[in-house]
Amino acid sequence: MRKVDPEKHAARRQAILDAARTCFARKGFHQTSTAEICAAVGMSPGNLFHYFPNKQEIIGAIVDQEGEETAAFFQTLGARDDLHAALLDFMDLVLELAADAEFSSLALEIAAEAGRDPAIAMRVGRNDRELRSALQGLLAEAAARGQADATLDMADAATWVAALIDGIFSRVAVDGEFKPKNQHATMRVLLGRFLRPQADASTVTAGA
Image 1 (tube, rainbow, N blue to C red):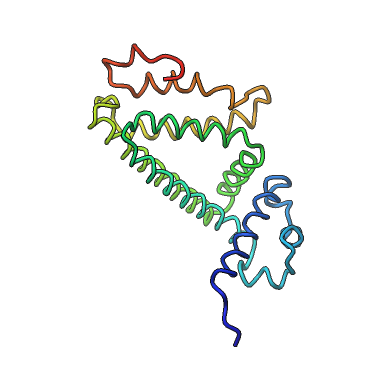
Image 2 (image 1 turned 180 degrees about the vertical axis):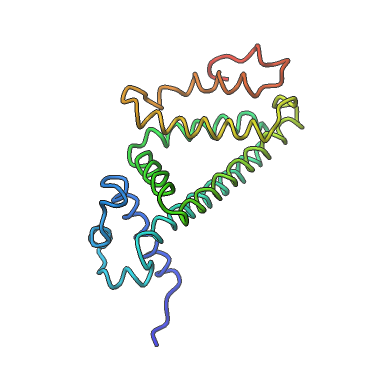
């Protein structure tokens, strides 16, 4: 029996996910066939099934990976000295991702599939809970350091930030004139005023 090379296996698996991301974003999840994913990655259908049994598991793995990447990013944010600034930098990244047509289209495809497939909905829901938990932890620590409004209910504040993230992607989908890359300054003012300690809120300006 041939021994599997873990590094080669992981690389091929990642290549499938990368190709599937592009295909799902451009054509839609249900409009993309496994044959098209195979063609994009340069792999036979029989070989593909050594890595994923079906398309549902491919999109599920994409959801899992996005959750892992978000968790890793929040680990780096938590190590920052200024957590208020760290959160605003995170939201800058959200705007950059929303401006990426492929990323934004894929996010909407995943959301749509979560509405149809309970298994995908569970994975998306887990990512959402973990995101809100990470936001809540970041905000609570920021408040403890005097960098965020300690009078806020941190769970509610985290939910509102998560809702803002969802809204950015929804706005991109319905409003062709909305350009996320043009919204950094306004986002920083609005979110900064919402999160700043009350004594500092009146001093927040564009670029804060």
